Length: 141
Image (cartoon, rainbow, N blue to C red; front, side):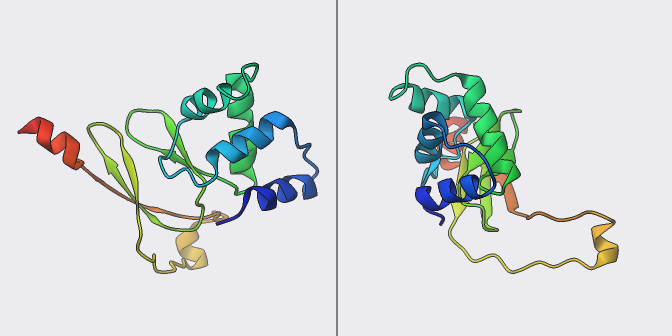
């Protein structure tokens, strides 16, 4: 996984200014395996930086997504979740509560022919399995 300093260096190399707010968001997201929403990150960063705005969090996440520094997961429920681990990997998503979990298993490299790409310029992929998590299964019983 890319370190906080490597992520910051990448942003600077691409000409983006490194503000204290961006640094705080990058640090809050780093190694966070909970797949937080923008609001989750906002609440986390706001404890250290009370003047930060939710718009700043959204803008920073959008920038990170654009440069490949975060994986945006749009799952059931409509809210986007963010994953700092951008290498292809598997997610389990609970269809009841929306919980997202990483599966620690190597993902085979998947390549598509030009015909299969249908003109798309691919940026990455991930595999998502949908089901009901153990906590929600207990609630059903």
